[in-house]
Image (cartoon, rainbow, N blue to C red; front, side, top):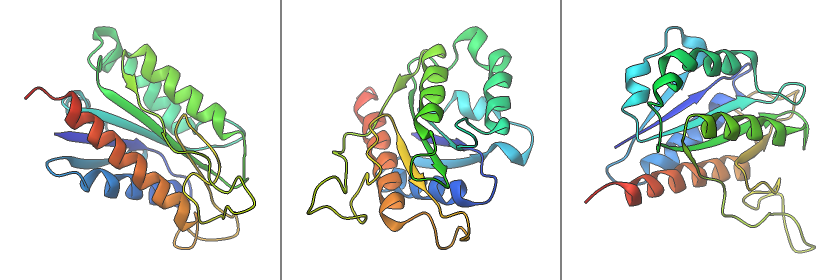
Length: 189
């Protein structure tokens, strides 16, 4: 079983989140994770067609997904959408920005709408928001309080080897694991 993680990363922070998602996927026995950076050139549409799930990731720039991920979305129209080749595949998403909020929800909504148009089945987070009480901590999973997908934050003056925070990366791994478990449940015996 294969989970493809299709992402863009302008400065390396979103790539680090994609790797954490892949680690979570690989925790589930029998599930392979494949990282697909949209900036790497020609897309292997056949590999995406045979994927059991596709997780989308993008930095949030000015409240939107990156231009490169948007181009991938547009290119998929002829390659996948016109014949609904991704119908009933599991889908999920993640995004990163410099600001705590940064209008990341808009990026996740864009991904979920894209998945819906392809007939995919969206999987969100089933985690309560972290750091939302007097006993909470920035080390909590889902510290930015998202349900639609993973939101991470990277300080704009720090490199990807320092940020996003460990709790954000653990939340990303949790999403990868959740998607892989969902794929396993939906597979015929």
